[in-house]
Image 1: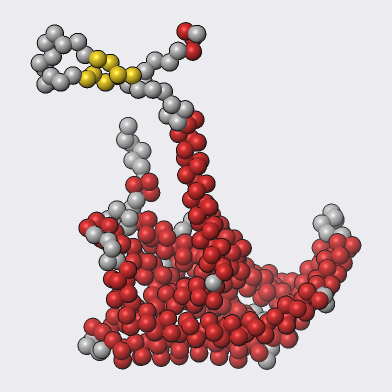
Image 2: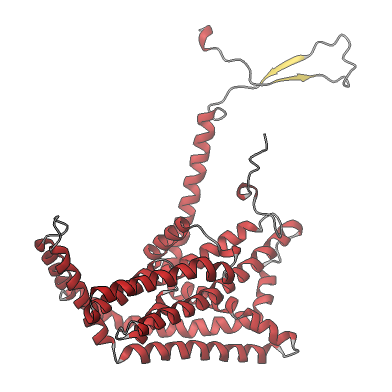
Length: 391
């Protein structure tokens, strides 16, 4: 039995005499009982249990938000748009304009910007969408035909036919038809959500600061200062992300439009508009737009022209990543590519296309909050850089 006897982990001396005046008093040793939760495996178990609890809480929140997307999506979009136009609102109020007229003028600016963007997309794509889709499909078929000529077996004709038949079966199935019929209710939901978004956006622009101060009433001292930093940082990051992404998307679309015009690729304007729209989805959007442009060039102008189009897309994306984004986006929203990919995947699974668009700014805002958790320029303790020379 002696082999399994554990020694006390700590020994505490108990006495009523002051330190240094023990005299002949014999100290008593108190043995702290050993526990299964105090060794290494026990601490690991506690951490695992804490992680499970956090995951369950986060999953419950996500599932709950999914049940009320008619409210959460307009709320998120309103917050992002209000953050993007906060500098204009601040500029007007600093000039002495009352908040109500400043809010109305800002709302009109948002309507004009979004209206012009929507009109440009509809005007550029509406009349040429059929031709654009036919060109893309023909280009895809040319790529498949070229794959069949490779000396090694990459895809068999049977596999291609099977995939095509699967897609056609789904499109002509009752499930797809019911989804199309359900689109009527989706339009009604969209209209309701849009009206709700405009209403929330109005109050965010007019009384956003008052609302935030009301939420912060329970906080005191250090917690109040931290909550203020979190709010300010979130608005700054979301606004900077939207303005920076829109500027980068505009530069990308103009650069690719110039390249397509020089290479005499048809449907250059609709392709440039799609580049602008898809640029709001990092990585994936640029890839889709470049692929579509290359397929159109392949059908109309041949392989060489398509390769030049791919070169133009790659060049524009490199200029964007190395020059535009660091200047326009700044370090605040600088996320690692792996983090962006994970955020895109989670956002797409949770919220579809809209989730993919919102995933990156929300992740950037969360990381910005971490960067000011302990001070204006002091990240949370676990997120601080370690001194490699420290021992």
